[in-house]
Length: 328
Image 1: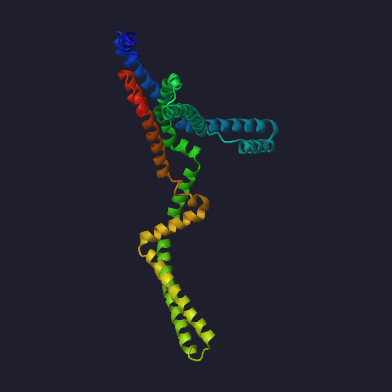
Image 2 (image 1 turned 30 degrees about the horizontal axis):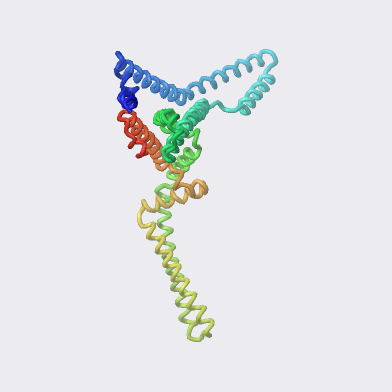
């Protein structure tokens, strides 16, 4: 018992490292290098996804100069007809060749790298949660390794920010985002003030037309009802009810078009629905606001779980108490 007690009283590994001379300065230097490395990586990603537009333009300009020089050589050697054929062949070659989109290619590569390492972090978190849930003894051997692996998860979400923030990368990866934005812009441009006023006038005219039809039907029923048979009388009564329902529906639709803003919103919504039925049906899930919310929610939830489990482990290392394991 005395041997166990003396072993328990030995300083922990973290305390031994902290007592070494120069350990604090070394820790600060490592943290600075880490921050600089992450910042340089993010800067490289941003530049690689933003600047390629100028590179593509320069490449296209170089191709144009090559085609012009080739056409000039053909004109000198074979005349104007051969030069025209050369120009047509160059145009066909440019048309058939795939466009260069380095921004999209970089975005796909960046997403693949982030997701690859994120899966490793999620795997470490999974095994940590499994060990804590099952209270297994064998997991103690690899528990700290899995916790350290899961602790890199916040960095993965930070590295994913360029994919979320940069429009070029974001639109290249999630094609529904530019499609939705284009439909929204086109719908707002199509619904002009004249279109809104015309829709309001048509709504008012439909109410008047429904009331006019109702008056005609009531007049017809009043003239035929006294001499009508039971079956015909029932038919005439139903005809009046249908006409009244049409008036009520027209008035209800007119209430929706009571203001220009309501009419505009309704027309824009109808335009988006007809432009892409599938995308419109998924708008509750596929929208930019909810998309950002999901990213933030997953980041906060996963990183919070990792942080909580890691803090419990550190407290257990410092105090040697088993209650932190029991909490998990």
